[in-house]
Length: 293
Length: 194
Image (cartoon, rainbow over all chains, first blue to last red):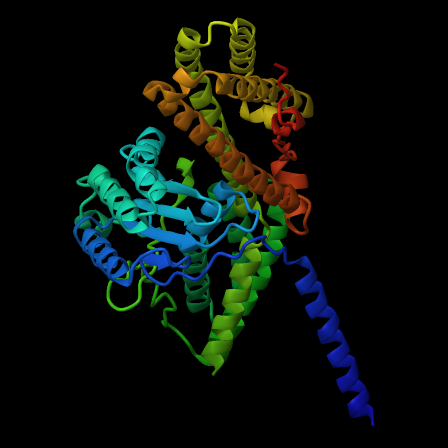
């Protein structure tokens, strides 16, 4: 009997919580469709042969230059602003290599008769707003006006590739630096400190606590330039920390085990190419141009 | 097993130390400053485009001296107002900057509507290029503003949340930052009478 009551309450709580979470999620006007490959022809304006050819050309281009160019066609924007939607797409797909930001998107909204070239930070130097605008105006839209989407897209993508060719080489993407995460470094640092403290002062917990109480505020003042109340708090924390470390070391008999083993790099942003395709983590700042036909 | 507990306790202590917000608050403030620098550079980019645009339009739209003059004046006013990082916490300074940039936006959009009457100008390659650059810049301003406001929201929230609020109260004394709102006049479609 009590059990069912508890279950009911739990279920109620769960429902309430999930309602809260559902309620706070803003629903965007137009969902960003999933990334299928380099060519995402959701509007179905390209012939299958053209789509395959483009996919191959763009894949080849990425292998040579590491630059990722992605195509998205949608049937309609459903009233969303072209620029907003475009930015949401690249923020989700993240074409371009991490740190190099060498990605670009060609977005075509068929029924709205609008298109946009969205350019990543790394390509803004070559594929400027001006150049993007000319590609749209002089190369793509004349073909679109004739109803020849295949040729317009092929010419447009070719022009984009020609403009950014030589801007990056594949080797650039190997030079990506690994960021040493701040929390990770802090964590390792404290683990080392506590481990050493515990090891040395394992047999005398109170001494350990005293050392901790002295050491922590000194460290706080020197390394973090803290002062006042915070030092007091640190002293207390150091006291407890020293005590715990000593007790733990005593209890386990651990004397020289290090915990700082696997602190390898935080690698991110693989560029795909084998099998599935995914964006490499490029960033965008609204560069590019829009147009219509 | 005990080593796992040992490890867990150490992890907890380390997390406690890093959760006081001393570092993260400052990182977040830096993010706000960086986002603001992005806004400033896009605003500067727009200001740099205007002399060229005015010169191009002048050659064709000879009857639009008044509109052009307004753009030039609004540009001069907008570029004269710059905010230092400390000003980001000053509502009056932020308000002033928003107003001047908003006035420039609306003067520009009025100009772009007016030039619709000049087919020669609209076919001019140089003008079309400038138009692309101007649109691109406006879009960048929007993106930069959105990101700045997100950074401010994050920062303002953080300095009020426990326990970082205590760290801020006793140690850092960081002040809440102002949002950069889009001017209402910038959004309104300009009316043109012929």
